[in-house]
Image (spheres, rainbow, N blue to C red):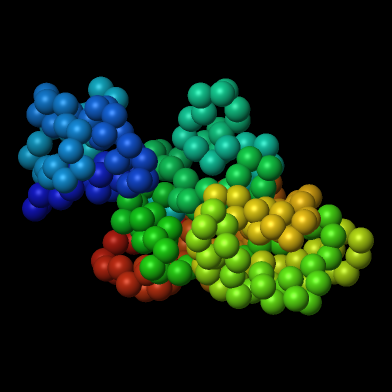
Length: 248
């Protein structure tokens, strides 16, 4: 196998996302052939080199696994949590391969979350350039005006950067209305911050769809394996090599 960047190797081995792998490298948690490596440009060959992360030798995953999970409220979208809070991994039982979350949902939010050990899949589905749409239902503390709705759709400035155009549809008109929101970017707490920009808080937030994939009948805390057809459709959407298959 040709040499690849360390962060890609670590991600492909199912240890963590590529972004988190970069943090592990720069903080000295990665060794190649017994030597600590902190340069992000370092390359290696997983078939030839001994690569350790946090003292554990890594290997290429035997099988690629793709999961759809209904994240409950009040759990964090991480593999571990220094504050001791419940993580999404505590709900993933009986999966032989080590998987990790693709992207994130904040602590108070619920809904559809993907988990996998396919690093390239995770990297492409979260990369802004691929613009994989994500759909949410949101309960707010008040109704946006028509002018505010239009500004929400066109983009507003958060932390000095304009948000990408978004989908917004009123689902239920009331004192605390429900909206459907569709985003193609995933800034942290973006929907909550956008409503706060207009003077409203988000009471409930649930992600119902990622790309074509719907949450379906999964109850909070439940997961299922994606079917080969679903994996193939994602890989075509992400313009990936179709030679690898997910399990049913």
